Length: 108
Image (cartoon, rainbow, N blue to C red):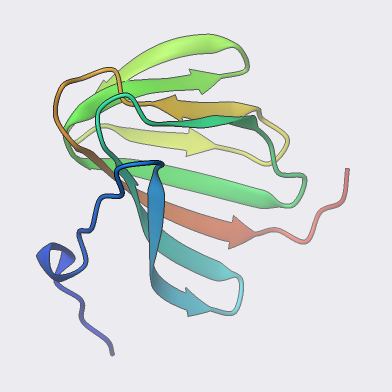
């Protein structure tokens, strides 16, 4: 078992969003996505990764297949492999999102 306190690893970069790795084992990879106000991750998709996103704090917009969805603290989002998604911190506060990736082994 391994324990990490999120407050110990929160480091927001001024120039771009950051990802802080948490746990990686087998097909599982988890991390925190850290967005200062105005920061983004461009739309992209994965052919072999399902992802779950949990908003720890703050709010922002997730684009899912070109549709913008406002998400806030305690929202959970599932993005299956092959679905295009991106992130944009539209608020004036920092945005923290837990990312859980599972490698499905599929190939598109």
